[in-house]
Image (cartoon, rainbow, N blue to C red; front, side, top):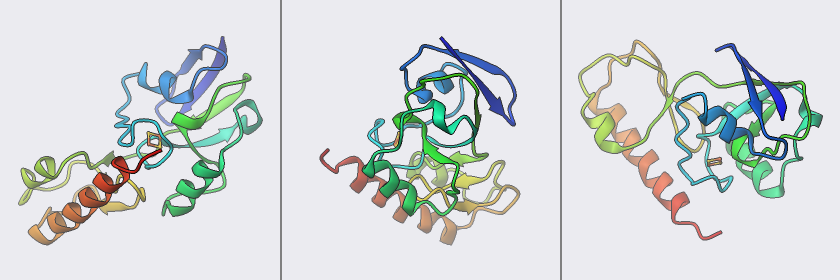
Length: 157
Ligand code: FES
């Protein structure tokens, strides 16, 4: 077993050596949609490894390509579905905000104030900041994001 520290939520995870980081995060009831089914093609499992980068498997070319599209990526960025835990000392930061899961979800929120940051499921970009009124034109941006997500989901591996 290996130990992983989470920030800013706090807490320590014990994960099996060789298992994927995302499995440890899901065991903590974190909202991780895994929109592409864990294939390294979306942003919904994006995390920052603030320490212990050498304690996980290195990124594949596909992961690097996906991270290259993320507006919110920094040099610590990884996709949790692609990281296999190999050592102790990992500190993982989970980005704040919710990813858009369905058009219907957002349609129902038009005219209300966003209770969270809503993030684009592929680029990780903040589509609606917390506290902003969700208008019809913002909703239309979600429709495009949903179309893009559908295309990614249907991409053969
Ligand atoms: S679940 Fe899509 S990249 Fe990890």
